[in-house]
Length: 116
Ligand SMILES: [Zn+2]
Ligand SMILES: [Zn+2]
Image 1 (tube, rainbow, N blue to C red):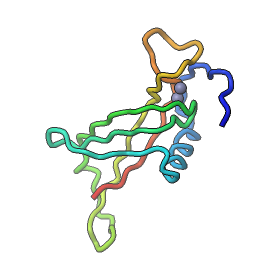
Image 2: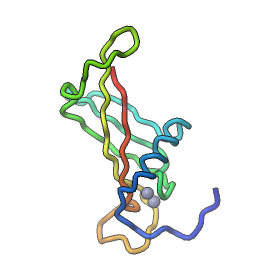
Image 3: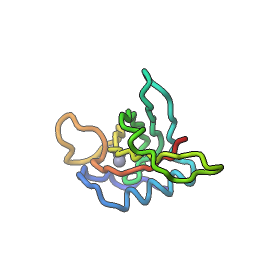
C-alpha cells in the first residue's frame, strides 16, 4: 500500500469504517486484547486505523458488561456477551486541518467483541 498525500482530519462515523474495521479484525491486522483492570474488563485495540491506516492503539474500559449478556446460546449452551466498543482513531500520523491538540484522523468506528 503506497502512502498518498496525508488525509485531512475529518470527524466521521461513516459505517464503512466499522465495516473496514471488521475486515481488519478478520485479517488479524487489527487486534483486541482483553484484560482485567481492577475488576472491570478492558480492551486494548491495536492496529491500523480503518480510514487512514496509521497504526493506532485505543484502550477501552467497559462497565456494563453484565447488562449485555443475553440469553444467547453460545457454544455448549454457555452464555456469551457481545461488547460494543466505540473506537476513535488515535494515530500519531499527520492529518491536515486537525484541530489543536487532536490526534488521529477523526474517524470513529465500532468493534463488536464476543466474550464469555
Ligand atoms: Zn485514522
Ligand atoms: Zn492517521
